[in-house]
Image (spheres, rainbow over the protein chains, first blue to last red):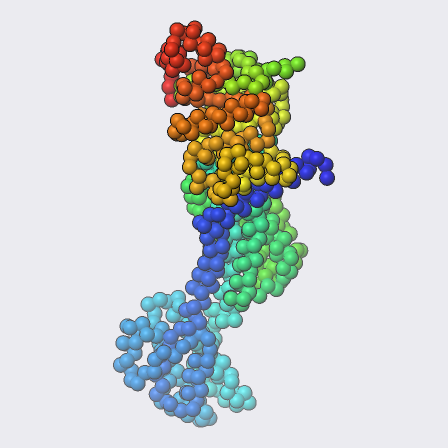
Length: 380
Length: 247
């Protein structure tokens, strides 16, 4: 190692150590760094699945025969429903909905078992009554219930099904596949959002803080190269972001039972590219702002909203008007979202995602170049 | 060889459009002297100092610091100067030793040097007990003294101090100047801007800037004689009241 490289190494090490001190001394940034991903994952994870998982259902069983009891058992055994009310008469129905004690009521008419089993009956009827005040969730839970009833029907003696039409009235059109949980949709979305927010916000704030405090001047008077200032600022946040990514993945796999079908190493490699893109964006913001508040505001408003809108995990991009679709191509998270879905859910390799990765890398280069130029100009 | 002269400027100027922040100043600073750089707010002191430190590119004129040209060799200058800005220049959320390690590090000192300097410095300031406490928890006067000691950590040839004693009580200011004298005795050139005219008296030579121009430069004694004044305060007042601009 030459003398110059040795000095460079010492300089960089001193700088990176200092940055870590800053992060770990500041409770707010620590909370942001590790609280945000955990909160997002938990929020998205359970907000999206809780309602579907333990929907309260009332049962008005007028048949009380073995078939009807088996059906109720079946409903209760599923993780989607919890039988909360057993009705004794039809009048109770209104009160239950008004009090919000159940979202659905399943009515089993008298003679259900008879109608189901006997060859000469035209078929068994069931009635589902849903609380339509929240149409979306009513529709979803109704579909779930119908699916369970369909399963119940199939579970009856299969040989008899061939011969007889039971005529259980069920709608087969599934709007929501219960096997496809919410997690695969939003985990990649949360990953792209959280990494972006953290990288952009933390780097931009950390640089602008030095400007605000006046320590930036001291750094610029020192023999430490401006380019190295930028680089040394980015390294700690790159490391912290990778730790964060690991945290998100662990939470997704163990808490949300989301599988990772593809290559983990590839996922980390491509994530590093995305993180570098985000860090460059943060650096750019820091070169055009003078106060921590401004940097925070631009990072939050300028990044969060476009990312949520144009990534495709909340609103499908294909349905947007053309100008917005074009704008969406400028959002780095869009590409990362596609990449993560491809690797985690579809289990695809580099062949499927090289284009998106290249776009991200190109963006990073461009952003770094602009921020480096801006940073130099600020010196003079 | 310009063995004696460490800073030399010739018609050094900085203009922002039509506004001449610094207007053709020429002066020389000798090695090991304490050079006071005086002027009212907005006179152009900080701008001039920033040009010498390589923070700002001059519009015209010549300047060399520690024997290096400010246009061509700013990186060589940066290695040989120390700088303490108006704003507090250490990291408050780092401990004293961490600050020393950081600044020692970016100035390219070895670990052994940093350790040794760290011990020496804390002993000199009587801060051994506080070495591991956050700088933010120290009283302002101690912070300033610490900032100065850190600014000369890498044994610079010249140290630039931009109003280093702002907001500090007279006793601490006096102690601060003891540090300056000690550094000057080691051969460090001190280039200091200040508001306080009693501090001007401590300098070997002072220059006074008014409206971007340098209107006087001499030892405090000579200036007092020249302007028939009892103190630097009076000298400064006579010169500065002609100023056209303020902040």
